[in-house]
Image 1 (tube, rainbow, N blue to C red):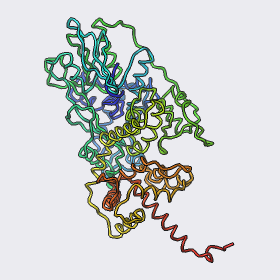
Image 2: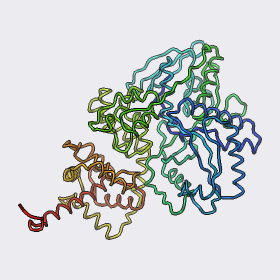
Image 3: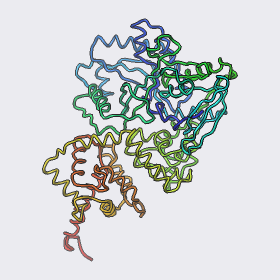
Length: 615
């Protein structure tokens, strides 16, 4: 099995993360008496139960609230959701139930309360899609499959009109070679037609790509026609559309700000028309399996929830072609991890992410040098990812820094800014495992940085901020000018990397854990300003690296000239005030430097007589 990029680098890691049967399809089945829709929902609910059972460390039941604002909708939705429960049976998840208006607002106080009648809670499932994808690939390898990521198919070979092999290329080294194959299965999602045309250039396209954009919490999705690309990007219009829809369900007093979006991503869903049917214009409701005259087996369409059933149907098609023996399928074993000396949050994270391999990961962890936790140095202070996961991720076929932050750790999806901050440390560990030199490390940081900027919404956030007019009072402007000039001691009119280095050195005292906790309790925990600054302070006498200082500078340097002008600083502070930006390390650094400057000035004014003595 070969993958042109990393495992789950495409649509598989950019999903809604839901394991669901499809409530809206059941509604169509009932209202239109459509038996095909009913079968699709029944199959999906059966597969939902299977996923929750075979991979409990990567999946969990997810309660979903449906707010109701018209009384006639209460029995209507209640009946529909109860039918959903009935089709699902009693496996793995709880039954749905009705909540009064009071109880609904107690659970979800931010909901719009005007005309609210109550809420109906039903259950579906949620998963870590990228790790699930990787677990499936590694399980196949464990049972004898040969798998390779960053290896693409460039050509299909035929013998007497039948497929007999393929030409492969290593996308990291450029090396090419041929492999023989009894059967070739095309499971390439939105790139389905490109492989089909390698087999037969005259075939008509069956894939209709549709982009879906999500933003963390997760909110989404959109559904728009798009071009097939390896690097789909969310647009500002799509992000604003989702935020507008979110506001429609929340209390008017709740401010949903553009700066609250920590990451955004776009995935391409491969909607397909069925070539087995005479009407090829209509899109298939579920998935299709098609075998070409040369023996190419194509599986297209479908969704994450039904992946196992789709795979079984595809293998059945290959067996029917007479090229594989019918040997059945092994089951996946799973175990629970109970005790790892890495702190409760890290231990829970390892158990949920790695299942029965959590101990293997923990054994690779470095000692922290603290009384507790004993092992596991975090790659970012506010997330449970530890150094051992980087080393283990390399053994899970991670070849690039992007593989690591996007598909092994998922940090890019949780907080794009935190991913950027952790990137140098992650690359350093990967360099030890993969023998990268300094040139390769810089290249990996550059490529991963471009991924975060373009495909995870970081650049969209920045572009949105730069369009905001400066809207500050005269007093605020004077305050920020004062802070700026404290850092710009030479009155150059801009702040350089050396100014930042000097400023940070003047504040080079690491706070205690208690002080950090106190600061975190006072600030917006969606962006951990004080802690992030501490990453750039001198730590036990170690020098702040040039790369780290440049990262602070790049956040605010909109002119990309390696220095911060006053207008850039004011633009950033205005964006923070309006909520378009959650926080800025540079802004926090300027604030801290002002406080430090005032304390130093106060010390100079205190005479010996006022100091309490003078022995």
